[in-house]
Image (tube, rainbow, N blue to C red; front, side, top):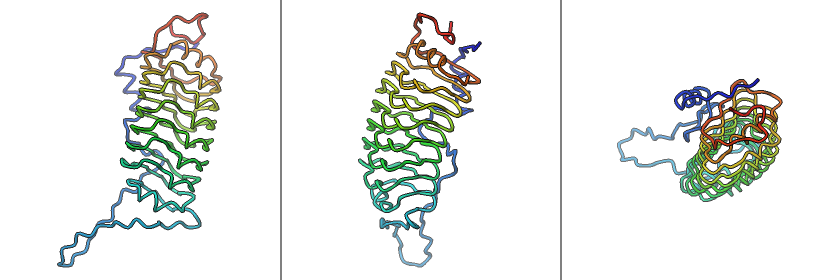
Length: 280
């Protein structure tokens, strides 16, 4: 018999911090470090040198592949990599002024992780629609104007984890409708406008832990109807309009039982009939 554990807020949050889960908006770089080096001018001649590297020309792509990690901080960084079809390392998109990613339309694969975070003017991810392969983790964090994930519909498998957190305008996950498995953890946290998870209807397995936390308008878990396996831990808490019965039904459909289960501070309701895994 599965025991649903009601833990105090302090214990729950401590567990999440130790084992991963809902991000505060900066990735933990589980798939390798990012190249944070900057081009600093070490010229020691006597003239006053205020020159900075502003070269926004195309970067070198070896047979279409950019070798290494790549960071996008402004629109010109997108234009510079427009001819590349793959990136061997990690791709970070942190462009506070970018309104679109259309210049990345040739990109089909990222060898490391893909982080899309703190893009305050970005409303969609259409420029990423050609990506079909993602070996590392997918982070979608703190994008204030992002309303949908439709540009990610080509991805069928995420080799690392999938972390979607702090996107206040996000209304649906429909762009993830072709993802069938997540190798690491899946976290969906801190959204104001997300009402359902129907975009995850093809997902059958989560390798590690499932976190669903702090989604103010999430009313059901119907989008996880194909999910049968959660390999490690199961956390669903602080979703104030999500009935506990929805969580119980999800637990009942799993054929692989998580090692640890925490269900608390959702909408406490009375289930009829009572599912086997419903908290008392």
